[in-house]
Length: 107
Image (cartoon, rainbow, N blue to C red; front, side, top):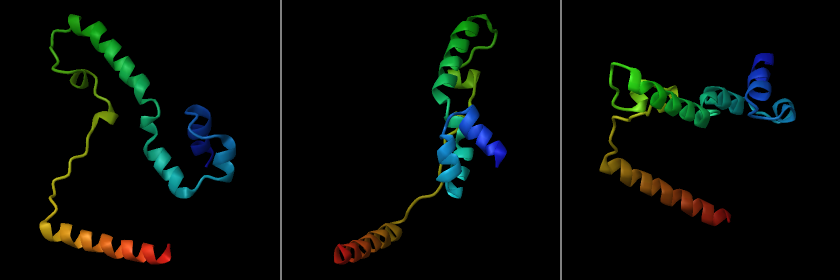
């Protein structure tokens, strides 16, 4: 737990010490640790562009983009290879209507 506190509170300033000790839930901790690489995304983007435009004229290999020259793990985009069928869409619409009816009765 000490290492997590060091990363989130001291090093990356993502949460306050009080929040970490008193309020932080387990699922929040897991999510924050998995997505820590996005904490300084803007700074890394700036560094990447500065490096690319400084060094690119002197390299023998020509890169098509900045992402090819200096890839970051935040560049990876998840692609989904599945499609939703019409039957699934209809069942989701029916489920949404049932939930709406239940919520209207409670409200």
